[in-house]
Length: 461
Image (tube, rainbow, N blue to C red; front, side):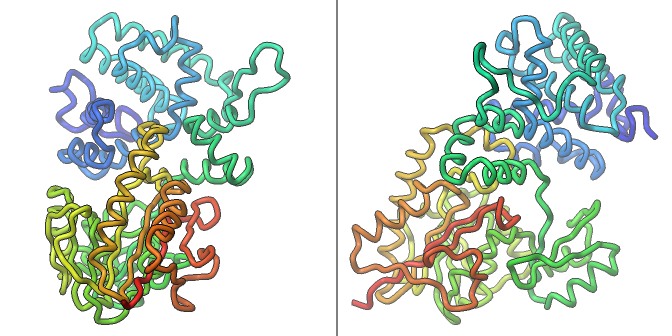
């Protein structure tokens, strides 16, 4: 076992004043998040120089801290004189990371969690900050048996028990306003299942491409990968264990790509007719584009983000996709027309994908629903204009929120009498994910990422 309990630091440790590169990277990602960067892009950039083992360790720490942040703050607030609000936000993140290592990462002995956090605080904020971190973390370590988990929120004076929404928000570490919305819609039990699902590690699901499922399974198993079936979708394969996908021969040969069943169900629900010319107007990261290319003769894949399209193009080349034309274009101003079918997987709040993006719950604001709603309406109107008479428009999100889903579809149909909602052909998707002709996939009920979609058919003229 290595010095810090299973996490080897490598030769760079001494050069960084005794702090492991992985912990430095973790603190840097936290700083990026505070500056507004998304977790995925920051993480990939910051861990690029780390080996595979350290990358996995860093991800465990960072994602775990974000999933427990509210609870960690509650534990820290009682042990920081004056509360967390008086601290520099970077120092607060160092404390959160330290407590997470102390209480949730068995690979890290307490002395290593404390010493490394103290040194990190000293390097970034000076001696006084390091002394505070040392005192707080040592107290947490001494009192670990008295810190309740699940946590017990404090009741207001004179009240018999804590507010149940407060209790859910603290126990599962979600913003209270979101929990209140979900409880009003689904009730406390269903909401609790959703919150628990959001805090679970997302599985790795792969889709065969250019090869039948049985061949891919055999290749993966021969490489020592454990494979399992995936409910709700055909051909997808769940891979488990400490797998580095990029090192697999089947990956380098372009025989699969990664896609959650929630996303796969959107394109299955779309049920594009064979030989269609299709536009995927919000295409990055490209998984739905690949699915559409299975039946379409041509897919025009546009996105306004050049960097996201660059990564997408790299993946398309890896799998040797055919019939896909990529262009930088804003979906509010489509560059091609007329099209047989158009998919718009519109920008959204992403409340159905919190298990993959634990930073999103803390970034989201109530006002984002209105901001996203306006953008979605603009994209929907523009996309409808490039669908040929008799053609198909598929509107989709990875949001659970009615304002971004049903309300958008109903508003569009009310304003455009030449369009109708058309359920998919029988058997396109399992009945369990259909709701009044629309696709509705819920993490707490279907054990996937959340997804919504509606097939809209234009009159022939």
